[in-house]
Amino acid sequence: QVQLVESGGGLVQAGGSLRLSCATSGRTFSSYAMGWFRQAPGKEREFVAAIDRSGGITRYRDSVKGRFTISRDNARNTVYLQMNSLKPEDTAAYYCAGGLGNLVSTWHASYAYWGQGIQVTVSS
Image (cartoon, rainbow, N blue to C red; front, side, top):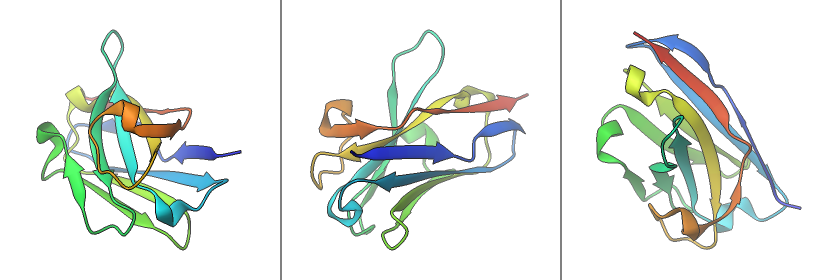
């Protein structure tokens, strides 16, 4: 079956950096878009970033543009989210998502597979 496993989360001070990784298995990774979403307590899950299957097209939510970078290594079946200049409002559980196709979508229903989530906490 398809599995997505996130790693790299943790506690960091405001202004710091973290890199999340999402290792996938169970399907042809290089054929699908990938995304990152996040969910803070009491809030709905929200789009963070997405990347097409080749890595040539990316999308970001406005509040992370210029600070976060999504990338992928198709040889390693892994997608990354480099997060710099972190802010307390970035605190959330972050979820990796595998697309239904190659659409670089901000909509959660465009993603068929989800990781278990990993906590990122930014202290002020």
